[in-house]
Length: 286
Image 1 (cartoon, rainbow, N blue to C red):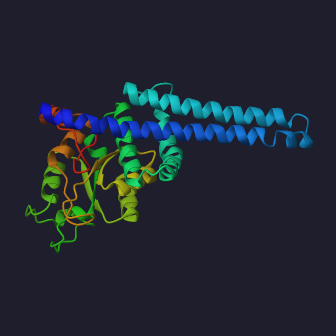
Image 2 (image 1 turned 90 degrees about the horizontal axis):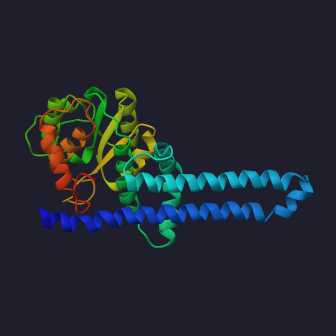
Image 3 (image 1 turned 60 degrees about the horizontal axis):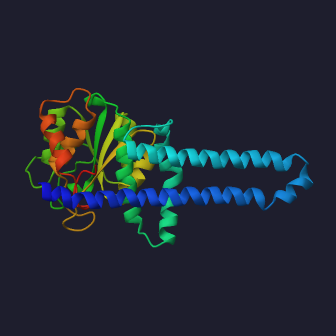
């Protein structure tokens, strides 16, 4: 186990460094753009009104200070593992503002979208955990992708997951057992539209979602401000076909947020702390 931890840590650190590097570069680009937007037309502002340069200067300085606050408080949140300087609001800013810019900047410097999204999901999970909020079981939604269901299964589970015969040929049987044991909601979505409908109907306080990097990233953005804890699915047959997720990963994630966790959560928490993922095949991203 110790050997595994030594193998895991460098990759976890690398993912965090990628996010920190991209968000730092993005913040600097935003600050430079604000400075240029102020300096370049500075002379032209005087032709509008003598006070125009000062007014626009104050506006751009405020934008620069806001970006600095967002950047530094987010980094402090990541390093300290708890909100600093109202940084709990940074999750929304990161989701809505920084992620698109980071993706664009990553593309310009040759970093793939998948790597940026993977890093974003990891940091998002840390920000959600840092809020240190526990939820009643009936306000937690487990949202699963349709590709977890066996491609050879004829049962229609999207509208009623209890149509599952629990044959054990795919992870749905284990997920239903988790739902029954923990008392949480469980649903399967075939796409973004169905996922949004499920969220509106269930009205969860927290979503634990299983999906690939692309769907998790877009889902986290679509459902904000509802916190989403992302678990990457395993793809032994390639994307979108007979994917899987580890039961222990879902249980460990639930134990992090349940208001009244069962005794078994002590074991699951230990598993989550010692069996963190070493690749995208690992299910839970700590």
